[in-house]
Length: 225
Ligand SMILES: Nc1ncnc2c1ncn2[C@@H]1O[C@H](COP(=O)(O)OP(=O)(O)OP(=O)(O)O)[C@@H](O)[C@H]1O
Image (tube, rainbow, N blue to C red; front, top):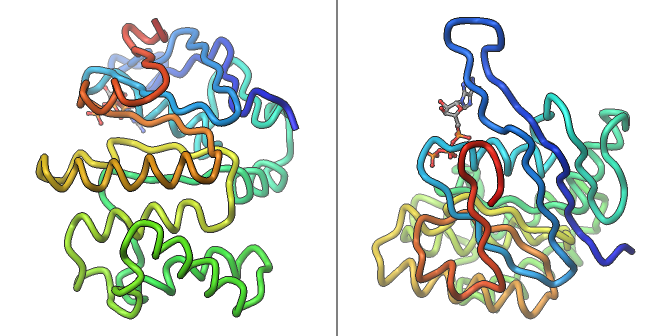
């Protein structure tokens, strides 16, 4: 495995190209995240941080530039290969939990593992272990609507880590929480990330949270400063 878990090089992205609504969001963005490194991405609203995270996580394609995950270039790979890399190597957390409402908290963490071929017993044990680490194992049989906002996000972290990814991408993971809950939830996330040796790119508007990560990157004018 490469020491660089995520590398973006010369990434450009324009929406509505050649129309009056053209927006050049990314204009040659570069970044690199080493194994075990936790990096904050700080950017003004609308500056393209979600676009950058989606490209990094292979949910969207750049117009130009190179994305490498674990030393493997993703450009020119088949959709099947990109999907497999996204499923196996990348975990996502968003501002809103996006848990499946009809399933319990535990099931939300078990299901992605079953989709990846893990047996039911092992998936359940791993899910409960992750839940215990962030203090939501007692809520395993609750549906998302029966959980507090902070609990929902902690379950979402467990789901993101369920398939043991190498890279966590988080888009304002505590942005929807009150400051005290955000603090508790962020601390739980950091502990989980550090314990598992995961690399992470975490977008936040909160400079205090950013200061607790290893490094801060700023996205401005379509470039990483
Ligand atoms: N699918 C799309 N089609 C057209 N324009 C888009 C699309 N997605 C995003 N944009 C535009 O690109 C710009 C960057 O959007 P993006 O969501 O990446 O920003 P952001 O930094 O994550 O913003 P916020 O912090 O407000 O979520 C915005 O001006 C947005 O309106």
